[in-house]
Amino acid sequence: METLLLTPNLLIIRKLESIFVLRDAEKKAIKELSIKTISLHSDQDILKVGDQPTQCCLVIDGFTCAYKLTYEGRRQITSLYIPGDIPDLQSLHLSSLDINIASITPCILGFIEHDDLHSLCELYPRLSVALWRETLMSASITREWLLNNGQRPAYNRIAHLICELLVRLEAVGLATESTFDMPVTQAELADATGMTHIHMNRVLQALRTDGLISNKNNGVYVSRIDLIRYLGINDWKFLCKMLVDINIVSFINGGRSSYDFSKSL
Image (cartoon, rainbow, N blue to C red; front, side):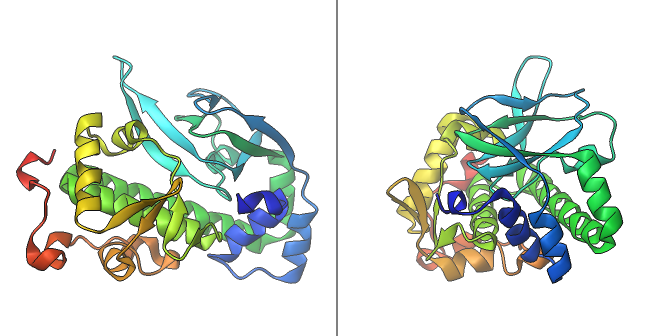
C-alpha cells in the first residue's frame, strides 16, 4: 500500500493538508514529532471502553474501527478509520474512552505521547485549529452515519458509505481512478450499517447488477463516478454537506433498480 512509502509524520501532514493549510514551520514541527510504531493482526482490540490512554493512535497502514457492544454482545461499528486518521484524538482531552477501537485488517499503528501533542499545539496554536477541524469532520461523518442507518433504505445506505470511503481515501492519495482497496468484509459492513450479513450480500449484488460498483482485484471500482459523487460527496472540506439525501434509483436504468426497496431495513 502507498502509505508504506510515507513516514508516519508525512502521513499526518498529508492528512491535515487535505483540510487545512499548514505553514512550513508547522510541517517541520510535525516531522520532528516522535512516533512509535507497532504492527497488529486483524481483529485485535487496540483500546477498550474505560481505558485511559496517555498516547494517541495514528493509523499508518490498514483499516481500523470504533465499536460498541450491547449487553448481549452484539457489535455496532460506529466509525471506520483509514491511514492518516487518529481514532482516539478525543483522548487528548477526555479522561477515559467511551468506545472500543480495533483493527479490521492487519495494521501498522503509530503512537504519539499526549504530552508531545500538547506541547506541539502550545508552540503552534494553528495546529490546534487543524486538529479541531479534523474533530469536527469526524463529528459530521458520525451525524451522517446516524441519518444513514436510521432513515435511508439499505441500497442508499451502502452507496453512501462507499462514497464516504472513496472521498476519504482520495484525500490521502489512496484512491485512484475511482478505485480503492476495500478490505472491509461484508460482516463488518453489516455491523456498520445495522443490517444482517445476508441482507448486506443482497445489497452489494444489487449495486453490482446496476453498474454502480464492480470488483477489481482486491478493491472496489466505482464505475459511475459522477453519479456516486452526486449521490454522496462533493467536497472533503465540507463533510456536513457531502452526503445528499437523494434516491439514486431515479438515476439508474431509467429509474429502475434490481433491488427491492420493500426489503430495506
